Length: 256
Image (cartoon, rainbow, N blue to C red):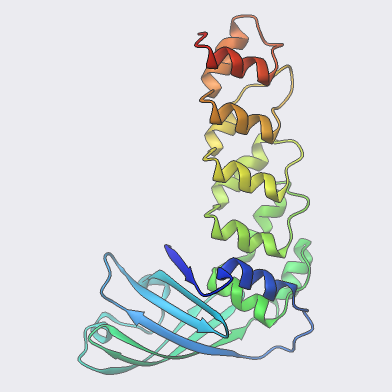
């Protein structure tokens, strides 16, 4: 899913603000406006939603939209009603389409069990606006559970949104957990991902000086072009006690 965010503060700031609001809000529908553009490539539509000061647009697969047909997308003018079910709740849309363009109003109906399910996983409780943000990002309970299983001890509700915005997928989290990265934090996960360090790099990297490399050491090696194969060759040559700094220096000076 490709997303773009507009308005002051951007989506991340808005999400952080909502997630900081108390979970004491009473359950009930949240309302806003939506727009749709069906003139996109592939099997998707460009969906826009506005809620208070937040505007979000993204390409949404038609397979995840219930009640919207291709005939309606190509009709001269037609009323539409469709829904997008999420773990956090259901987004319900009503409006009009004209030759693939249109809009209307939406309501969000939060799932009353979502907050308690997050608490059972080890997160803080969330309120209605929190759940709306998580529904817009399509953050599932399976995703939240995998983050905890991967060993990220300090992962909180806000990190669910941050990870999802950065495109961190379940496979990446599973590989991190299997690799046994020491002192794994939410910020560390983002740093690894944003530096382009894939799960294969982490999985294949040999021990350095008899221990698993720390996150900042992985980033240093990766950014200098030191791959797991190079580290393994250094070790097989009888230099398994070299530090990360020494390995990087050898590589930078062209030592093979």
